Amino acid sequence: MVIDDKTELVVPTEELEVVADMRVRSLDLPSDPIVVLLAILVALAVLCLAYLASEIVLPIVLALVLKLLFQPGMRLLEKLRLPRSLAALVLILLVFGAIVGIGAAISGPATEWAAKLPEGIPRLQERLKFLNEPVEALQTFLHKIDGFMQQGSGSNTGSGSTIAATLFAGTTHFAASFFETIVILFFLLVSGSTFLKRAVEILPNFKEKRQVVELSQDVEKNISAYLVTITLMNAAVGLATGIAMWLTGLGDPVLWGVAAFLLNYVPIMGPLLGVGIFLLAGLLVIDTLWLALLPAALYFAIHIVEGEIVTPLLLARRFTLNPVLVIIALIFWFWMWGVPGAILAVPMLAITKIVCDGIRPLAAIGHFLSGDE
Image (cartoon, rainbow, N blue to C red; front, side, top):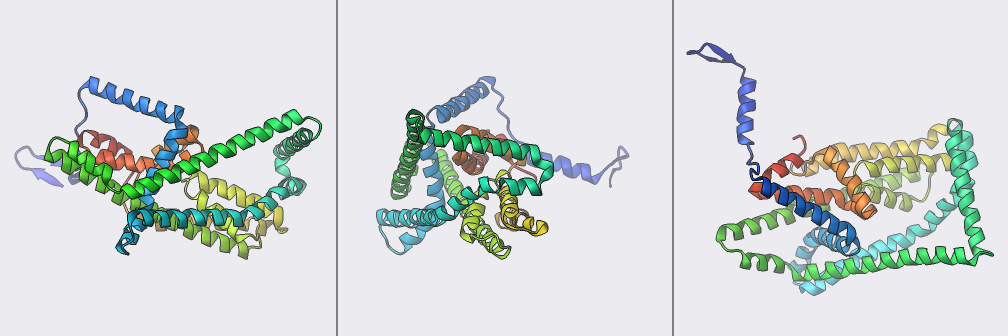
């Protein structure tokens, strides 16, 4: 307790600490309503552009995020005295070659599991009697889809050609976006700090030049560290999950490891979906009920250890984000861009926080995006 002798008031020390902390954290809020309104309008215009021009904007954003992820690898190859163009080409070929190879390795097991699902409906219905109505609805839906596809491949050639055209158009769109992302990523890696140099050259005074350089370095350093750490931790989760599924008798450890690796990029929602997938797979394959629940339980335990202990310990407090805003960002960007948007939601939110923290007029927004420390 702190006692003021003149007024004989007793002021709790805790309250003094809170006031002092509030003074330290005091942030300048925009006072001009016109500036606030213009900022809101610009933000809405950017979001509308991102939605309407998603075929163009999404590959660019994905390439920018991947550039931050690949930056440590670029520095390592440059230390080996490789030219930037050759280093970028080697890095892209290694990473995307590994992705294509893993995709080819899991395509067979994934097809087999997809074929097991309609056949396993009666087994699931027997083991989960309390879910009879939802399972019957799912079974009816699968039968209708199967009949529709058979009808389309038979006499009704028009429907079949329409479905084939739709699927082909979707495949073509994905391939085109993937190619655009690789091309943009290659030139981003080759160009290095060209954009930063040009931005520094056109700024009027030294203070702004230094601020832009420091902000750019801060974003690159923190986001690269975040993405590399998350990728390594997701790989560890995938490895542990694959071993756990093999030990429980579920089989196909590569398939389940890759599934866990990818799902872990989507916070909260991805692991929840993973628990449902492993629960369904266990009930389809394993006879003993408690053993059938074991794959989902082990995956959940692995996720708890990684998400609540290891990753927060490695990332410390510099990446703490408001969990409510993380969920809102996941839902919003999934609606905007689908699965790629959900994967990019947290990195984009983290980049926004770092940029706002580095620009004094936007510091209040960065503070609002922060989680509990």
